[in-house]
Amino acid sequence: MKLAIELTQPQGERLAAIAQRLNVTVEELGAAAIRDLLAEPEPDFLKAATRVLEKNRELYERLR
Image 1 (spheres, rainbow, N blue to C red):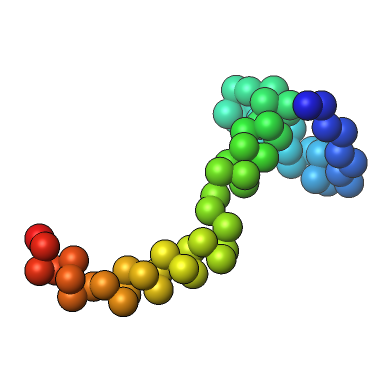
Image 2 (cartoon, rainbow, N blue to C red; image 1 turned 90 degrees about the vertical axis):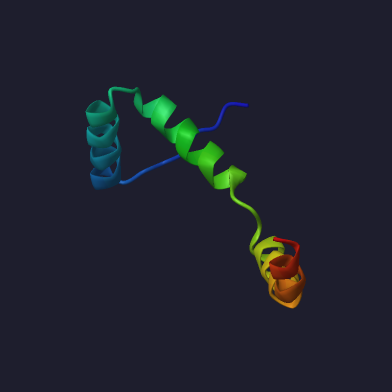
């Protein structure tokens, strides 16, 4: 999928500087940032997982 985004001049300059420092293209850096964002679990999942872990903490301790 191709994606076009519009950045302000300062944002574009900052993105270019970071990409240069990391020795990647601006496109590679943008794609990596989006992949990282998409790889993060949804807040609802984190909330549910935390609840389950807290609820079963005593059981998990005994299973250790």
